[in-house]
Image (cartoon, rainbow, N blue to C red; front, side, top):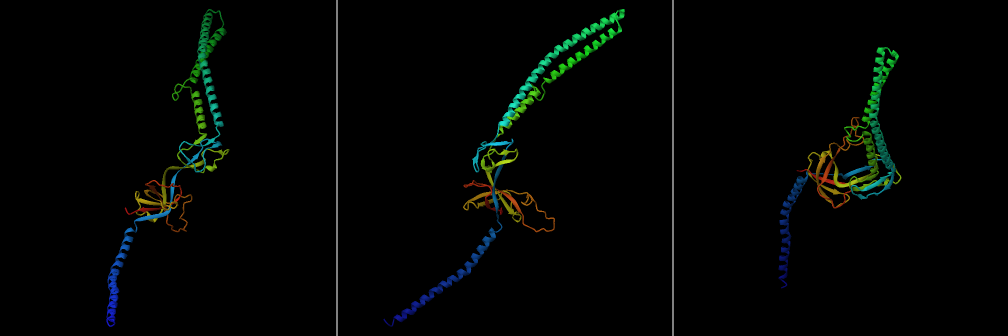
Length: 353
């Protein structure tokens, strides 16, 4: 047995040496084939995906913003909202002192009453012009009869030429009196007449009523209400006692109706970009949020073209800079998180189609 052991041990050692050789024999062809195939796969994936998308991190959430101003000037007497408060369309925002406009309504009512009194006076005057005309006609008839009598007496030689001329002058004065009475009647009738624009109502009364409606409208405008629903912003500038002028923004309402993405792409990225192409939007504020969208429109000019001070490149010191073009991305799904106007976003557009 002691002589057999040395013979067994070399055989086992030989089998142990052959096993790594067999492994290396299969590993070498596998590496020779697998590594090139893997490299070809990576290269093919890069080739297939390169140029299929364009992206930018120069993008922000945009929403409709309505600047609310007052249509009447006055002093603020009440503020009903606070900063970042949600409001619905028609909710009260703040009040302007209504007393001056209430006084204007009362003055308009007084003007209507005064116009009505004047019209009543004119109607009475017009009714009196009929009697004036009749009296003037009676005087004319009497003057004519006196003239005829003086003329007959003149033919008989019982009167003087002066008396005849005096009678003739009286007839002329009576005719003029009739004409004046008729003119006064026509004028009085015209003053109480109604025009085609306001049938059935005297123009003076119609004008007074229009002034009252204007005063009432100004009074209602002392309560400023929300034109749209949204979130109140910049409300800190509203202070009780502050004097407001018409047309100046008092606060801003960020509308909650819709949101979109304003993405500024490089001009070199627009070659294959078209309206309707799908897009993916991610937000810096919500790292795990990703929304689907599409290209809604491509801007008609670069950002610098519409800036307050556009670039002037005719001075000879021009350096070419890649321009940015605003592209509007419409969101195709509702966001589970609130989208705040102005927050940053990353946009990737699939331009392969």
